[in-house]
Length: 401
Image 1: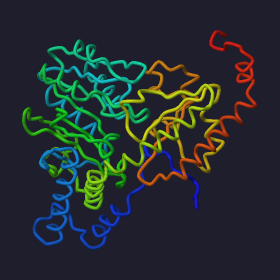
Image 2: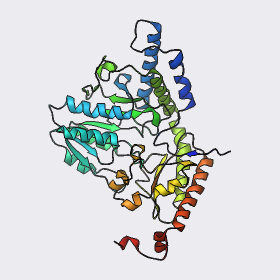
Image 3: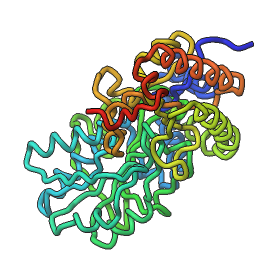
Image 4: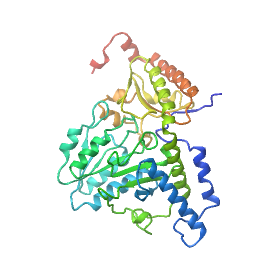
């Protein structure tokens, strides 16, 4: 039997997998030692759990466990990576290259450094959401110390040409960082094959708990060094001080392990459901997919329904379907999505967009319900819209100022 509400906002966060929760629970009440307490069994057990989780997370992205630094989430990991590189390599230069469609964690960190004297190049994207590789290479100067381009976009699911970007970075001796928060655990990511020097991820995007994430920092070829942004105790090899969140770390490790083992099966089940949802909703007149339909995450689709306000649309079913109009980090804003605007999409169409994020626990029955409900809501809003009526009467609304 279908239970409401239906959750289709897995890009914002995912439910914690019961197997992850079961792994975490003992570290709250039984194995509750501080992982830095190395003088008794409680601390030893906690440290062992952290070491094991570090290996699990490293395996997910093809890294060495010694290259993984635990953080409070991807936002902290992004701040540590970008600010850490900026401070450490200031003697070489202060130029950083990123893209206008990055997550706010990257954009706001770069804007902060810009106020401190950093030179930031903001690369545009094309209609499908990709950066121009020639423009990227042309932007590199002798002062460039970092290129930061996200692996997969959180709003459109578009996957950037990571290996090609890495090749350019390597060619010019520039460090390459990627925010893989949406990609890790959903598609194959390998830091060595992809040529990544720094990578960020978060547990709650892959069926783990909130409040825990990780930063990959390459140890060799090249060895990446960072200036710590949090001091006090020298935890995580002096890069990130603070008492380790052992339950969260154990949960992240288990979540990473499950994703690594079940990624292929999850994709084989989720992608067809996403495609069926998308195909059905595109039958609605004047409906469009935003971003590439080829190089994107298997669980994501971003759709615009022309002549309909997405906020009004969501209000029609927000008690029965959980959806968003864009990033959860900007959901309080009344402005149209900056990601969609960067793709060249008009304000009106950007305001008429919905992001669908399917997940491990999404069912065919839920997808069927979403198709029916969203279709009915769009048709209902359009039936009372004078603008829609003008369109149906043959008025070319795009030519009206």
